[in-house]
Amino acid sequence: MERQKTRAAQLNPFALPTETDARFILMMISALALAFLLSDPLHYALDPNATSPYDHVRPAPGTDLQASEFFQAEMDYGTQLMLASLSALILPLALIGSTFLLAAVLYWDHPRRIRRRRGTVPLSPQTDLRFAQELADLSAQAGLQTLPGFELGKNLVAQDGQAFGVGARKSLYLDAGLRVLLRKSIGSFRAIIRHELAHIVNGDIGRTYFAQSLYFAAVVITILPLAIAVSYLFLNSTYLKIADGLTPADLREILIVKFPVLIIVLLQSVGLIIVILLIRAGLLRTREVYADWRAALWGSAPSLASIFEAQSQHRQSGFNPFRLHPSPAERLNNLKAPHLLFDIRSDMPFIVGIFTSLILNGLLPVIVTSIIALPPGIIALNAGLINYAHLHPGATFNALLPLIYGLLVLTSAMTLILALLPFLILAPLAATTIGLQVQRQALADLAEHRNEIGRYFRLALPAAWMGLGMIVGVLLSPAGILAPDTWAGGVIAFGFLIVFVFFIWLALVYTRFFSCRLLGSHAKSTPPLGKNRLLSALVAMLFLAIEAPLVVAFFVIAKAGVVDPIQGFLILVLITVGMLILMGLTFALHWIVFRLYRRLRPVRCPACGTISTEIAVLGRDCQHCGENMVPWLYVTG
Image 1 (spheres, rainbow, N blue to C red):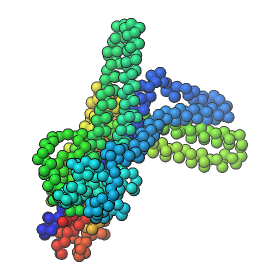
Image 2 (cartoon, one colour; image 1 turned 90 degrees about the horizontal axis):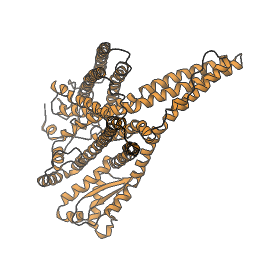
Image 3 (tube, rainbow, N blue to C red; image 1 turned 45 degrees about the vertical axis):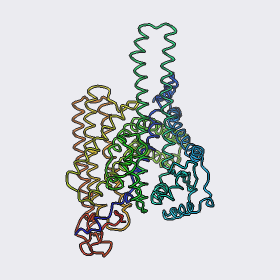
Image 4 (tube, rainbow, N blue to C red; image 1 turned 135 degrees about the horizontal axis):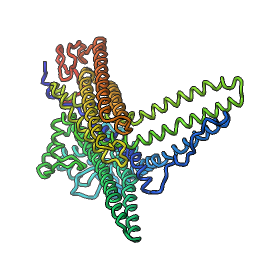
């Protein structure tokens, strides 16, 4: 039975974590990835004569030494190797620290810059009692315990606002023309104020201004210095050769080696800036749409719709991925059709794919360096303990034995964690971005009774976008660790990419299937945030099981060169079959667990308590009392 009440109700975009959260996570990850990715190229661009810190490490001690001499030499060798590895981490860590420090300073200073640019003056309630009272009433309706600081501009024509502020104290800039709008159209006035208050309630002010600060800091600290250093190096070396007299060999080196390197680095720098601009623009556009919807929930939907309709008649804007605000037509469509906020945006998997490659290219050398640093330090410590026990025989060795074994176990555990670190970042990133989008779309499709099998096959498109993003990420990486070295390696890499996209599609199918079963059977008045986190964790583990073995196998086959191409394809086939079996067992196990859980905890109507016979009750009404079975997903009014 389908009641008119359920059809009239609209989907609540805030029922699950919003897309704004996912895009902010992407912005944070981008700064980390760039710091690690560009540290080595920047190091050698600033100092072309720099040598590897491992060049100064003496060779490992031989076995022809006496016991005490061997342990002392082993301790010295391990210490040197550890210090050399730690010195290789100084620059990437310094870049990360500098990037986030500059971003924090810019973020902290943004209220002062806005006030200076706008020429704001604090609102004095005595100058316009009606205006001040209306602002106070709207703030109270928004649920704000503390009124924001209201600051006015001097432009009587403009009718715009801007929410800003650091910490708990937020401010609201309002154009002076809003005082006139209050008298002419109170509905439009309230819509604009509610939209700005929605930014405060949505909690996107701090994330937005910090993301913008982080974008600027990442460009200034990492990308521009690399482009400037490489350009200077090329121009300086070319000038010196011209001054000394160009030889044919010098000319060939400039045209065939140095100039192409310069062009590639500059194109990669521009490409990285474009990617960050895309993330920034997507974040800013998304926050505006969710602020519109929050204002609509407070009663300003008709006024916002009329404003956007009037603006869309005067503004004909085409596709622009760098636009910081959605077009009036786009805002109107999202307001009238909230299911659009539940759809998968193609730019999200594409950017996640780009940063999958960037993070792997940037973190893998750092991880290898960290792994090199860790065991030698523990070995040096163990050598010192054994040497001490050798010099103090008796019960000393037995007393130190548990400590020695404990250090070895600790070394193994930390080495494993370090080896998995890139994937421990990438798996949650994919689960909380693409996985979240699939969860939201699955719920919207269930609500509109669109759960046909074709919806699962359509998930191949975001998987393909992620694969395409990985290719772009490899092209944008100055350190081409994932780039194949030969044509045969390129063919193998393409095979790995196809397998990767296929398993990403299976992971998205898993996400959609259990989103429908787990979230779609949540018959309560409160959102299923706990189930959402559980499902995201399961999806993250699935992404981890996909990414780690494929990347490791790719390096063994395509980069290490220990097998020929035919053997490489056979290994890839074996890995594919093994992962298919693993994913099949995972799916079957989780399906069985879910069925058992449903038998123990059947779905009950939140209104009358009647047990439902449906597996997924989202989009359906109670067969007994006719009430909505999943009120948490809908808003009325």
